[in-house]
Amino acid sequence: MGVTGASTGDRFSFRFPEMVSFGDGAVSDLPVLLREMKAEHPLILSGRTVSEGPVMERIREILDLSGIRYGVFNGVEPEPPVEIVKAAAEAARGAGHDTMIGLGGGSTMDLTKVASVMAATGADILSMVGRDRVPCRGLPTVMLPTTSGSGSEVSPVAIFTFAEEKVKKGVVSSFLVPDAAIVDPELTWSVPPKVTADTGMDAMIHAVESFLSVNANPFSESLSLEAVRRIASSLEGAVMDGRDAASRRGMSLGSLLAGMAFAMAGTAAVHALAYPLGGEFHIPHGTANTVMLKSVMEFNRDQCTGKMSHLARAVSEECLNMSDEEASEYLIEWMTGMARRIGVTTRIRDLGVPEAAIPTMAEAASRETRLLSNNPKTMNREDIEKIYRRAW
Ligand SMILES: [Fe+2]
Image 1 (cartoon, helix red, strand yellow):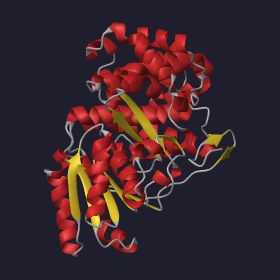
Image 2 (cartoon, protein in one colour):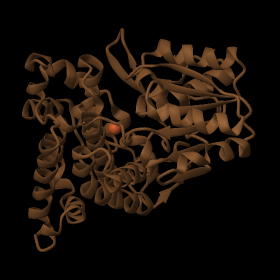
Image 3 (cartoon, helix red, strand yellow):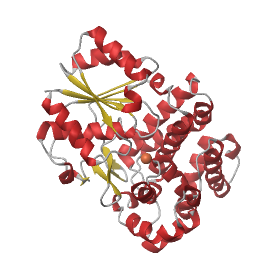
Image 4 (cartoon, helix red, strand yellow):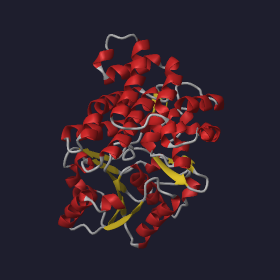
């Protein structure tokens, strides 16, 4: 067993942040938390949109009132290239920051996790790509997610785009699990519907893939099932009305639970086949997952009909009296229907990706062994190409 919290059958271990604070208004806990962590000069990392919006204004107010001195690095970009991670680490080192606060979506939090190690040790990001290659913990980190999707606030995973190779690669290590996370649903209220839908589909897929993973365990399974329940009842509401507090709360909690589940059990083939769409064609992560979802689940179904029917019964009472066979089919149709209702593309061709790109994408996806090894059904290079063709 690796040290990243992976599970094998009944034997499992996990590592979560020391402190997770959840709920509307939880962000006001930030000064107390920073004092507990003995943070004297934190650096807030964010992207431009967040740094110019109401969320940053609120954080500034809270910190200014508390008298904590802080810096801001607002150069995070979506799907951050490695140069930006280096720049963030240098900004922290240069100004002597002792703690890093990731304020944003998955990209910002992933960047913060790896930049904290680089700032503390001078380690190069390239030497950390892969599993368990991070030398030690970095500067203490606090995550403040502003979207409900990535689960990065509790996970040991960080994903980056390597522009020259046109691929996305993961840095995976228990040393990347943040020290603390404050999950405040109110921070997601200003997220536009398109991003809410895209990140929400990602969260749903984390719940589903972690539940079906061969590395799932009783602990992760209960988190996955509760996650899928919350997401099923909240996603449409959060997309339709961003200020619907109950739906935002449901999505924040669902995403957090799904993040904890996949931190243990991993994600699988949907993510593996989605990565080439992100690396090569810059398709947003949730959309890339969504276009692969149906075809991968149809491929998997005969190996995990029973487990898929559990998920189906968690998302809809309509399945309670169905056979496992019927319920597992229902689940696939239900997830695709949900994506359509909230406006997330479900076919690769509608993303402008040419069919001729499939062999190259299949080659790239077949190298994602970290994720494919979690899949409930073994998938070879030929299977992957067929799945892409069905999804196209
Ligand atoms: Fe994901």
